[in-house]
Length: 375
Image 1 (tube, one colour):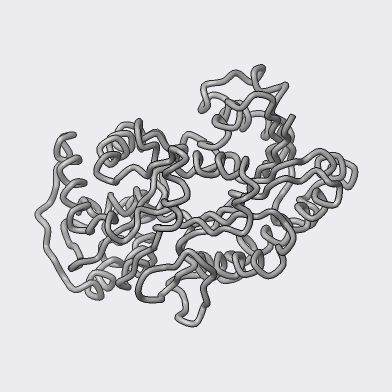
Image 2 (cartoon, rainbow, N blue to C red):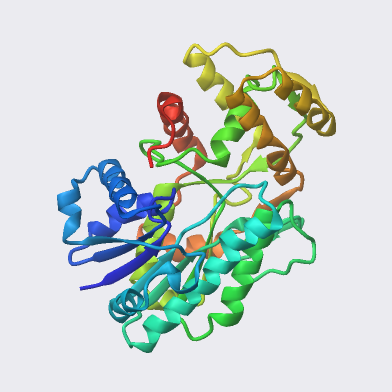
């Protein structure tokens, strides 16, 4: 029986991954969850079970939740508990992440680099017991930072700098893995902007992509919009990412590989096309759209404080997230995935194209965003 230890089980990727793991006969899962109390953790597990369409009783024999913190030494666990988990762990998935683009450097380091060191320490302990078969680590295409051109499917430098602290910290975390993860059976996965399920649009939470779509609709900026030119947005559906990670868990020959899980330079959608699709979808739901007024991007950044001043709390929060998103889209760059697809497609893991899943993704968002995140 395989025993998988996972961080970030309630996140966008983790919540799509767990049901696939449980579909494997004999698979046991231990989830590291951060909660204020055992009672709060139990409530959280109940919410997760409902999202997966499973009863808490159905999870009991195969899923164990432990209350800890990936940011703390020894995962925030007691020594005996940590030893017991490490002794039986055969596979590890590290998908915990804070994807906020406006963190302070200290916050970003604590959310990405410190957990990676803790994860490596745990993986080495599991490996010393002779049980460890595979480690999957979720990074991001954001490690490319401000570098122009296409991100290679290989380690990269930090010479060009980064758009925000999130990217910088994820690059540092990836560099730590490449430097100190030698001897461990690690595969690195670099998703681009994660969206919902390619068939249903379902998402456990609405992250950066959805804030960007609200922005592109023009509703939150009264129609004021930057000039996009030829800029493109690379997206990837969460179910495909989860399927790739599940496949990689069973393939020791993927050790040392870096997979860029993205649409790639050719299939990434021009922002102007994404905006057309967003506005058409919003209009089909009866949402009143303002006429677009295109301005210089720097001018828009200067107008945001004034727009926030006459907006409600929810819109102010959304507008606060816009400057780092606009900064993220500043460079002409893409993310190569030829080697990744050449490896995965023969295994039945064909990458869905954005135009095939955007209707479901946007429809699910409009149907559910008012209710808040599912997890």
